[in-house]
Structure formats: C-alpha cells, structure tokens
Image (tube, rainbow, N blue to C red):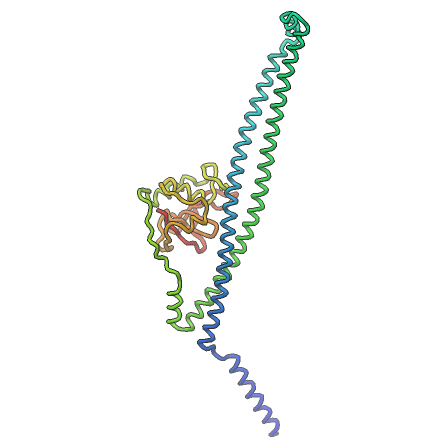
Length: 328
C-alpha cells in the first residue's frame, strides 16, 4: 500500500511540474523577443508589399499605355475605312465615266485619234488608271487589316496584363491580411510589455511633418468635385482621358486639371503626392487612395470613381481602409 501511495505522490508531483511549465507566464524579455520576431516578420511582409505595389503600379501604367494604343488604333481604323470608301467611290465614278455607252465611246476614240495605234494607246491609258485604282484599294485593305491585327494583338496583351494585375491584387489582399494579423499581434505584445516600450515604438515611427503648399488660384475642392460629376455614367476605359471613357486615375487627373491643378497620370504617384490628410480631416475634392486605385472624396463618407472595366463612373460609399491625399 505504501508503495502505491508513494507512486501516486510521484505522479502528482510530476503532473504539477508539467502544468506549471506549460502554463508559466512569459517574462518581459520573452515578450520582447516575441515582439522583435513579429516585427521582423512584419518588416519582411512590408518589403514584400512594397515590391508588390511597385509591380501593381507598373502594370497599371502598362494597362494605361495599352488602353491609349487601342484607342488610337480604333481612331486609325475609322480613318482608314473612310479613305478606303472614298477611294472605292472615286474608282466607281471613273469606271462609269470611261465605260458609259462603251461602243460609241470606242468609235469616237478611233475617229478622234485618227489611227488604231492611237486608240490602243488611249485604251492602255484607261487600263493604267484601272491598275492604279486596284493597287490603291489593295493598299487600303492591307492597311485596314494591319490595323485590325494590331488592335487584336493589343487587346490580347491587355487581357494578359489584366490577368497579371488580378493575381497581384489577390496577392495584395493576402499580404494585407497577414500584415493586419501581425500588426494586431504586435499591438497586443505592446500592451503586455509596458507603456514605455509602446511609447518608444511610437517615437520610432517616421514623422510626416513635411510642409505642403497648395497651388494658388485652383478653385479648391469644390471645383474638383464639380468637374468629376461631369463624368458620371462615362464608361471605364483603360488609358481613357475623355468623355468617351476614363480609368480611375484618368478621372482624378481630369477633375484636378479642370481646377487648374497638374497631377501625375497614374494612381501610384497620385496617391503619394500632395499632402496626407486623415480620414477625419478629409474634405470634398481630396483623393481617396487604395493600392492601385483612386477616387475623389465627396464628403459624408461618399466618393466618385471609375471602378473597373465594364463599369461606369459612379458615386459609392468609401469602402475598406483607404488613405487620403490633398492636392488643392
């Protein structure tokens, strides 16, 4: 019985030792080590995000350029079709003029020329005109086919780049989730260490104290908003900067241009220039910025933007976690 009781005590002591080992509260140094490890992981993810954002901005610029080339190809195609039609109508008119009342015209050529040789010479001239018309038409057709092939090629390139951009966007969402989780973990560790460590971490963050001087005589945010409203319902077109179609950064560019303010062409530089403002400070006319996308703030939590291919310029609620920039 003694032996059994002794064995029971040994098991009990071992169990309590294991329990105290497993559930021991981490020390401050252990928490600091965990925080440093989490911060290093966060830094690595932020570097990865910075690289990904560069790729997203680069592909956006590529899509804008392709969109502009497609628009140009469409314009060239319309012009080429018009020229081909004009040439075809001119050729028909010449044929009618030369061959109307064919028999009498040939006799007149003989009588007027005074010889068969002269008549044949004139007939050769007619044939030369026909050959010229035919070659001209063939060249116009070849040019049209060339432009159409270029347009198809550009559209295929755009589809491939859009697919690549979609993958980057998916990667960005996954990275954002991982970064948010790590940031929450670091915040929790900060709370558990001490107020001094949290304050030191806050002081180590970069300061945004750059003085911003807005352009003079630009009409302010209201002019930007008014200009943007003129594009409501306009279709989304990559590279578009007209009432025929705009992309997101094209809309922001044109709205600011109407207010006398010059902006970069694409969303990356638009979202990093001007002056940073908090969401609470945001005013109508400020740029609502996401990675790879921009819109114009209207106030009361609303914005106007050109969403995506297949959509039109519309007013929506500000979504997600954007940042805001002021150029006016």
